[in-house]
Image 1 (tube, each protein chain N blue to C red):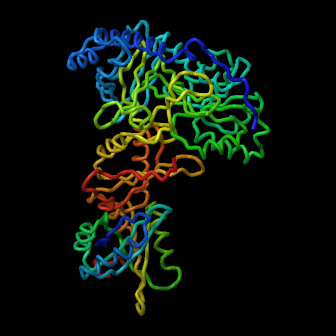
Image 2 (cartoon, one colour; image 1 turned 90 degrees about the vertical axis):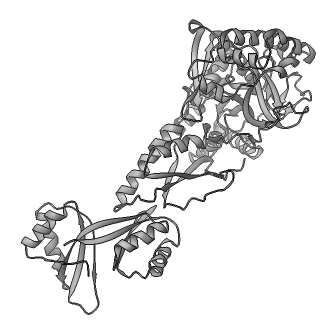
Image 3 (cartoon, rainbow over the protein chains, first blue to last red; image 1 turned 120 degrees about the vertical axis):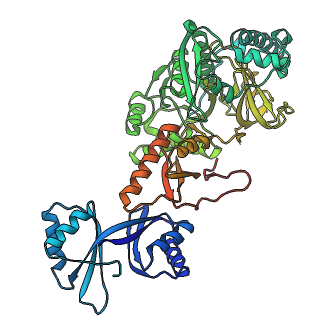
Length: 140
Length: 439
C-alpha cells in the first residue's frame, strides 16, 4: 500500500510555513510527518497528515498550490546501516529516487522511510521480494 | 573636462532660417506630405474624408490642427506595410520596434528618407563638435532597432569615421575606444553609466580615453546621470531624441549648450497636445508630444501621438539655431515601459501569460536599476489547481515562462512564480507596475 503525501508550493516569502500550519490547525488536521526542500527561490513543503483530502481542500481554498502524491514507505530497525541495506537493493535494480525523508517516533523501534520513485509498483515488488517491511497503511 | 569649441552649423540655410520663413517652408512641406498620404495610403484618405477635409484645406503649417491624429493602433492595423506611401521599388530599408501585442511597428524608408535621417543626425553631431576628423564609437544595438544604424549613417554622412561596435562585450568596447581614440560615443545613457563603472573596474580612467562628446538616448535619463557620465567618461553628454516611427535617433539633438534637444523642425514638426482633450496646449506648457514628418516619402506620419509627455522651448537658443527645443521627457501618457532601451508594454506580458493554462492572468512587474542596469522582475501567479511535487517542475515552468516572455518583449526578465491569490487584485485602474527607477 502506498503512503499519500501532500506537497505545497512555497515561494520565497516570510511567514508562509506559519500560514500553512495555521490553516491546518483551524481545520483540526494533525501533521504526522513534514519536510521542506528549498532552493534559493522556491520551496516545497511535503507532509503526511491524518486527513490529506481535507488538508488539500482547505489549503487550496487558502491560496496554497497543493499536490497529492503517493509514496512508497517502508519500516526499518532504528539502528545503523538499515537504510543503506534498502537503498542498495533499489540501486541494484536501477530504481531512481527523486527524494526521500524519514522519521522515527520517540520510543519506537522502527523508523519509517518515505520514497518518491518513478515506478511505485516496481519499487514495492522489489522491496517485498527482498523482505523489506513495507508500510501497510496510511496510518504511520 | 575637455573644452569643446569645434561646434559648427551643418546646414546653415535651414538651421539658422528665421522662424517666419521656416513656417512657410513647413506649410509647403505639410501640404505635399498630406497630398502624398491622401493619394497613397487608404487609412489616411479614410480618416481625412471622415474629418471632412482634403489636401486643399492645408495651406499653412497652422492648418495642421485640422488633421486627424495617427496612433500606434493605426500602424498595428496596417501591419506590416499598409502605411507605406511609396511604391515597393522605392523602399530601400525597413526598421521595426516592439509593439503592444507582440506585433512589431514597421517603418519603411526610401533613399531620400535615409538621407534626411542622416542629415538630421549629422546636424546634431556637428552642433556639439563632431567633425570629419572625429571617430564615432557606436554602441547602440545594430539591427531592426534604429539606434545603431541611424547614428551610423549620420556619422558617415558628415564624413566622420564610424566604429560600428554595436552593443555588448564591454571589455572589447573599452579596448576599441582606447586604441582607436574615439572622440565621440553613442549609446544608451544607462549603458554609458555602466561603462563608467566597467572602466574603473578595468583600472582605467577617463584620461585613458580620448572622448570629447557623447550622444545618449533611446530612454529617459536625468541630470544626475549626465553628471556621472560626464565625470566618468571625461566628455560632454548630449541628449539625443528619436523614435523609430518618426525616423529614429536624431529627430532632436542637443547643441553644445545642452539646453534641450533641438528639433529638426523642417523635417519633423512638433506639437504638444492635451492627451485628454487632444487640443493643442498654450505655448510652453506640458502635454503629449505629437510629430508630423514633413519630408518623408516611405512612411510619412501625420500628427503621430508619441505618448511622450514634455513641453517645447520657444526661447531662442544661444547657439543661434532657430528650431524649437524639447524640454525633458517627464513620462508617458500610456503604460509603455522602457527597459534597457527596449519598449515594453505590460499587455505583451499579459498575452503570454494568458496562453499558459497553468498560470493566472494576474501579474506584477517590478523594475529596479541595479548597477545602472534596468532589472525587470515579473511576479506570475499560479492557477489554483496547479501543483508541484518536485522543485525541478517549478524550475521548468519558470524557465518556460521566462523564455516565452523574453521572446515576446525582446528583453529578458526575471520571472518569479507565486502562489494563487497572492497578487493584489485592484478594483479600479490596474496597478501592475512598480517602477523603482529614479528618473
